[in-house]
Image (tube, rainbow, N blue to C red; front, side, top):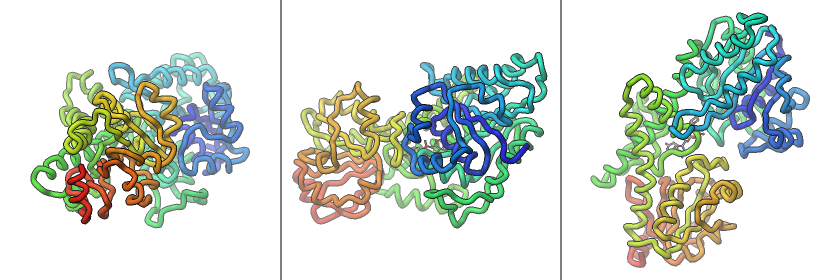
Length: 463
Ligand code: UDX
């Protein structure tokens, strides 16, 4: 493989934009392709269609190394082609592969017999890599079916920290035939050896040396992606399940999680109890594995339980509210945070969606606030009934209760007491267990007693 290599990246969502930016940054010539003319126009104007910290800078600093087009013929000159399109859940919960299939078909039209590696980064059902390989072979049998290979190279980036996750990954997983994996190793050499200079906004962490490289089969690589997400989802649901019992026996989930996480076999991370997971991956991938099992008459009860516990947790938060307010009918309830987690405007499977929808059913008058995601919510959550608050101040005013649903920095660093003073009733449901010191309100957390202040009792009487 030449360095720099010519790379085509199909799809300009989180994964596609991150991949294009990363590959350009480590020196390759990258063409980003999307069928959505609007998105390509935005990118050509230097705008980024999603909110991801540092991504604007990364993309805008690549100069000629990075170009955008809607024209698939750009794959003709590529040494390596990445498929980074969406696989949204279909009606039955299984991933909808139409975008992967149409990307593969479009690639096939332009494969011209040059050695090519087609890399799948989208999360696809196990077996899709093989399927795409066959699809391409069918299209290209006429010239040279042996000269291109499908590789599975799953992505483990988190939204909000996508840049750091891609530049300094724990591991790079590559599945496919040896010849193709060798090309991938050369393509990623600057990433594997960490010879690139860190871009603005994503410094190399001090502890980081280099990623592990795992070379395996297509099927195992595809399975690693699902199993990793399912295990993380399971860890969160485990913490949430234990938190319910902590409340009942007087234990503190934060201390319990820290206590078990110290065991290196368990690890500290992803044991944060609260409102549970949301986002585009955990729900889809746990469900995807269950569906895959079903196809083989194989049950996966642990994963089903993880899903059930996750969605039960949203109801647990509403129950906490009802315990204090008796009824929420006509009461003004404010939800702080709409995105499924901080530093993103992504609303997919956001717990706040379910909170608002349950509050609507219960007749509450809902106010919602988010530092970034409010505009997107206005477009995507038109079926929900809530008043968007234009400031944190406005969100608190005359509220009967505030639910802290997403732990944005803005909420972590704000001065609570003056805001609480403007509420009708200072009741706070901290659904992410982030309030660490007493505030002038009755505070409810998950799986523990909230930090007590002198005013807590006064708050309780008023509530
Ligand atoms: C996840 C995986 O982490 C990533 O490796 C994969 O590539 C895509 O899916 P993402 O969905 O961006 O990434 O978010 P993540 O940071 O993992 O958080 C997922 C959800 O779990 C969020 O709603 C978060 O609030 C919640 N969460 C996370 C918890 O409730 N408790 C925790 O301890 C950790």
